[in-house]
Length: 141
Length: 141
Length: 141
Length: 141
Image 1 (cartoon, one colour):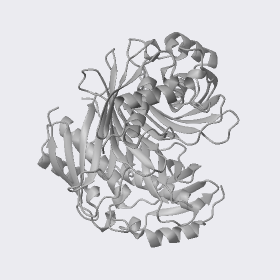
Image 2 (cartoon, helix red, strand yellow):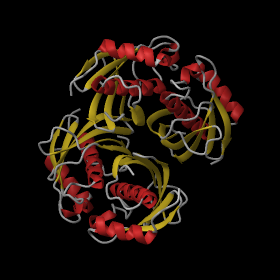
Image 3 (cartoon, helix red, strand yellow):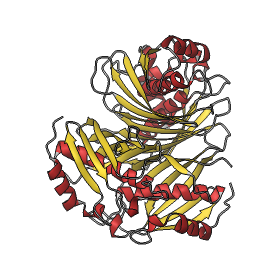
Image 4 (cartoon, rainbow over the protein chains, first blue to last red):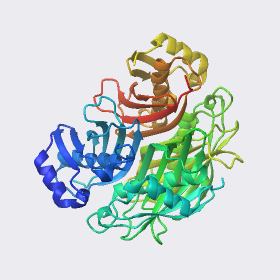
């Protein structure tokens, strides 16, 4: 599985096609792309926090969903039409305050469905704060 | 299963404890509470939309998660400490542009875990745009 | 959504195509078919039980998966090629000893994917012992 | 996370407490235990197969559920009372005929909940045939 888009190409694609994810300030960043894998960063702003200063569950779900989209696009190219069909997330422990990193790995890149696994952790944390799997329906190619 | 909080009490509790969910404009509203059930409305603002004017997947996940929290609080009282441990969502069809309603039903209200099922549909739609189940860890009581 | 196969046709199809589900004695029975819905019965034999005489988790998973397959076939006709892509199950409470009934409802019957929701309860029980959602990939038609 | 039970102790515990999993012939074997991880083998018998000679979905679900139980017991000791509360499985590709290996890893071992991730592959296969996550409720200790 060789990536066909770079970090810069993916970032530009997201900025152009999904400006809404940056409503309220740019928060999601593509950190790295490698074979079968993508890493995203969530730079928490006020809107992502819960009492105590930790990042909210819905922000982690949005992060996992976006990271899944990015790792798929990175390997099939810039198609806006990939859509999530299923997302399952387990919240494991409260993350420390600060940025979150989401590492997302392709489990399957089929003709019609792509399945990924994502681990979310605070920067420098060994333990996941959350773990998700997601399925995307991908356009025939 | 008899509710112990009213729509007004729940709305006030959310406003006070989770002002962040209203960052960018008030969008989530408790519509009704009945035995074992809650209905929430998502009044879409620009931040919730995707190209084409339909509400984004992450907005539906946030709606399901909040509705799950509300139906649980409605039956156990105002405890800020209930936390999501698992959420699974299937996206079924693109909703029509406009508000979304989320109907959330208690499947189990145990001593340690509560499990709910949520159906999300456009107002007036018969078919669900998304269907979710969620588990919350609830404080001993 | 109008069924195109009867209880008898579905039972015969399963017996012929999937004799393995009856290894160890016939246990799974199609009880009824109605628009968008199927009900299956698991008549527990020794192999399905756990200490205490209640039906095991894996038996409930197998029941939900089979019920999902049956409700889909009931509405698209006898195609052996529908395959499960995702199954999510929440175990809610120990069922009473005795038969289990699984009521499975179509949430979506698309061109490529079908999504169902299943509730499993002991016969006569009001509360679910388990609740599942499943996605099947269905052949183009 | 240091294991507190050996392969032999776990195998004996399963044989004694859950003889039902061997109904129809011994099929499930604990292969190895290491910090945070367990590997199980499913030696397919006729009852686990589908047309074409590949192992059925329900057999893989049972394998993942058992592997989850084993990796938890391996780290908390022989308590019969751990029960599955949630299992989510994605079926990725048909496995080749032959034995299946399930590698199960602890994502969280909390006071009340344990969460695991399992990858299932044919022996020698690099790609997973299925990937599951599961949550167990564990007795206070």
